Image (cartoon, rainbow, N blue to C red):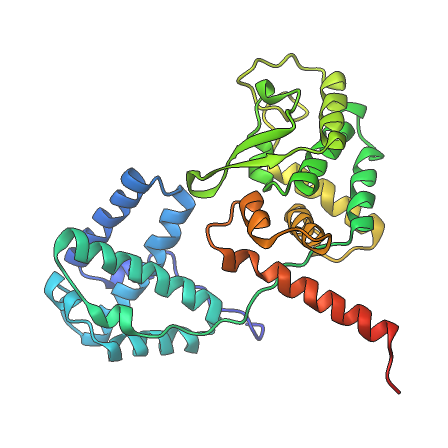
Amino acid sequence: MAAGLTPPRAPDEGAEAAAPAALALMGRWLAHLSAAEGAAAATLEAYRRDVAGFLGFLTRHHGGELTPRSLGETAHSDLRAWMAGERGRGLSARSLKRELSAVRSFFKWLAESEGIENTAIFAARGPRAPARLPRPITEEEARAVIGEAEAADAPDWIAARDAAALTLLYGSGLRISEALSLKRRDAPLAEVLRILGKGGKERLVPVLPVAREAVETYLSLCPYGLEPHDALFRGARGGPLSPRLLQLRMASARARLGLPASATPHALRHSFATHLLAAGGDLRAIQELLGHASLSTTQVYAGLDEARLIAVHAAAHPRG
């Protein structure tokens, strides 16, 4: 196996090792996440895999039946041994941090719903993962990407569609899922859009005239008659546009422009925030525009802007 790759865990490795009683509790927790919190299927599967792996470890570690009572007695040393084992099989600090978050979510539910309390799980310190900074592209590169989409070797309406969608990502800071969730009734686009983002959080985002014009151009060329409730952006056969097709259009544009692999549709959202901040935008206002739950999530853009200013200063004032 190549260095740096995490050895894959068999899909049901944790589930096979864990005791039925513990797995039954996990099943009830996942059902709660689905029914009460509306967790997505992919999220539920990731949680199931992470927590089943932890339960399987506890069963093997103690060599006996894992009961609800023994879950409550899980010690800090058990958690440390589990984390050491995960790192030993090549798991990154970031991935282990995600697994620990899932385990803590499970134990929080155990305390609230089953009366099984365990303070050791929450007292343990998780791994410190290095900060992952967003990688925006420049204003010129963003405009060039949209221009490449407009000039793509594709039917006129498809080129106009892709350019309109990418303009919305960059001009309004939308996630790709948010842009593709727009309906025909949303157009002509208003000056401000009401967007339903992650966790069902609603926010208002401004729409630039160039984005409204791009959407109108696309609709004037679109060969399909759309009902008000239909998705605004359509695929070649008339169904809702797949995010994958927009990602492929971006990949084609960045290849032609010589941009790095980090120049994805989501990088346009990063670019929106970074360029707005560089132009004097207020960090709290940018948080609202992006729909971030925490200001700390938005503050990474302040770090990027500071790094850019330092680089510009160093280039303009070289030291011998």
